[in-house]
Image 1 (spheres, rainbow, N blue to C red):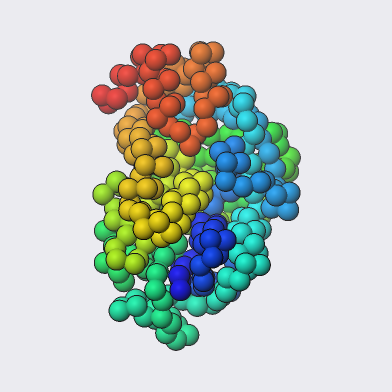
Image 2: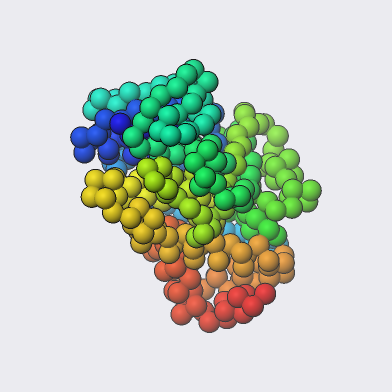
Length: 351
């Protein structure tokens, strides 16, 4: 028996893959509905097509352009080679759960995981035995804490509101700020997901940011975001961590759906062929997560003046062409390409 704690997109994808490989699987979710509450912007790059078909049921919008704004309100606009996808997270999370259920996976909703010891899981509704335990339970994973895998993971918070506002439905806006970034992601021409991650909430907070676009707020969404660290432990005995629970999130954009799903594929290989899980997932996504963290560390140290200059340097056609043709899921390719096309970017490494 393999037990997965957490019915988010990564946990559900893993359940589906394991069931497809013939394993008996149960999923436990502490909420009563899969995909709620929503704690994600729900935008993914074209890399997602390597993992799944983009089902029309959960697809809200597609975008092909992105604008990146500097603090002085200058911007570069990039026409992306491949579409980015905006998804309904509740429906998206449920997509692989439905596929997993068809293969015999049992879902236990409203079961809050509390502890694990000697092969026995403790929940608010009782105890269950398992042979393999997987923590797909997000930042501050209880599975990690109860199994000795927790390592004081650093957490930041993403704050977001859905606003009624007129906006080009084919355009995503990204705003560079000191110690973070903001975004406007359109669901359509009248509703946008507006949010930010900030290391200085006194100066840069959600109220300050949403006021730039009006005050017609539909609802609020927020959630903790783990900060990737290559030193985090992801497996011990028959306990494994995947997705946000393992800190598998791009520090550059705070997104981790694709990286978590890729790691889920590596975990199936690890269980099936008795391979080293830590080695497998790091080979698949570890380098990009590590480089993304290096880039974020540098960006967070830049002043407004530095960020203004960064966008000015990025305005050349050769730089925009690079950004248009390389997915954000591969920051190492972007970094190497930027330094090759515009060596003056190198000075930001010494800030």
